[in-house]
Length: 128
Image (cartoon, rainbow, N blue to C red; front, side):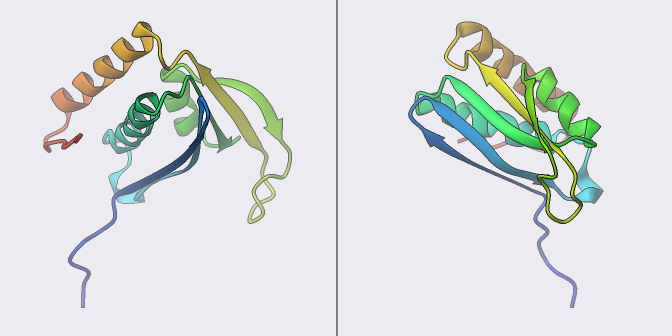
């Protein structure tokens, strides 16, 4: 029996004080490069802003150039490296940070990226 539903993307974060840590982000391989990863990160960051976060951090595989480019597009910068972070591969993780989540400039950046996604993608986004 074939599944009736497919999980296309999943993102998780936790917040403490004025910081959000994006702990997990994944997009189904057949649905990558369609804006889902960007939408997940935008959604997580919007929620964090609503909870008062001003800083965001995450770890990403050092070899994951697509994800690194996505995070850099949103203003994340590489702050460090965790050697042999991923147990399954022994690969290093890059630690990335973004500050200024409460700034008007960041709010405008989020709105700009949502507008691009909504123009480029054929599906309807429910951001509520």
